[in-house]
Image 1 (tube, rainbow, N blue to C red):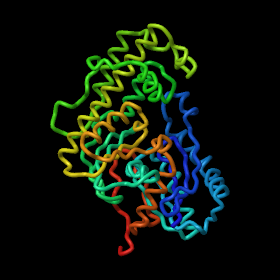
Image 2 (image 1 turned 60 degrees about the horizontal axis):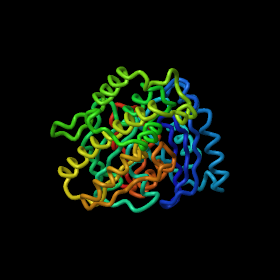
Image 3 (image 1 turned 30 degrees about the horizontal axis):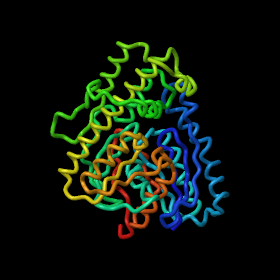
Image 4 (image 1 turned 120 degrees about the horizontal axis):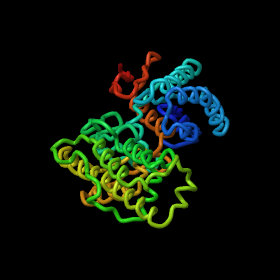
Length: 358
């Protein structure tokens, strides 16, 4: 079965083809440089850019893979959560392709697609505990199959990735700043007393990173030498030296540790509550963070679990994960009608697919 995947949930425009679980080709256009001017994603600009580049990416993908529109059996599209205008571009494009080719339409939960993406690199072992860490979400799930996800814990305010972005912005790091925090943090030992591990003194599995962000903001306000005078470029970060570099690396390492150890505590708590699982799946943009990967590897090892991580290229939003998730859903007999709705962030993506029997 040949499945086309379309991803336009935020500021990455991506398409990919997956045939019987194997990635055939993918194309991606990022808007990072465009939104860097504003220090964050501007929704109206994002949706207009999706509209501009999506047809070109689709044409290039089909040309490079040699596939024909009539070869496509299913069109999978990220239908949410995300920016509504951006989602509508992808959903509308997918519906048009299905009308033109007769392919089945499969709406994909963007969050589930992240957690299923490691299946492109290796075997997914169910049941699994899934940890999604991204710019907008920090969730834990009990995953019984590609179509069965039970939400265990969620972010109540700032997600882990959002905290990284806001802390980076406080110090005027280049956008997106999370990778600079990670890179600088590797140069120092974390001070585990510098920042709190937020929202751990409770029995719940939910997350809250707003308090940690505030603690860093207070520290930065008291140490203004940590802040670049204007938004830095990568060369300015690389040129840091002496005491200022030492102070920044200490802050970055300590912040990294506070996030990673908070995730560790909540994941270990979720493992105790979820019951026996075979693997720990960690995915999303923040799953590229080196300390989080190392921390989750230790958790998996201590609990006798297989750690399943996506390749770094699959951590960011991409078309391959949507195509793969769509292929899994289509194989299970799931599909949608042309009345498929886009679901913005803040609303639950419904399990409203039809099956071969429905």
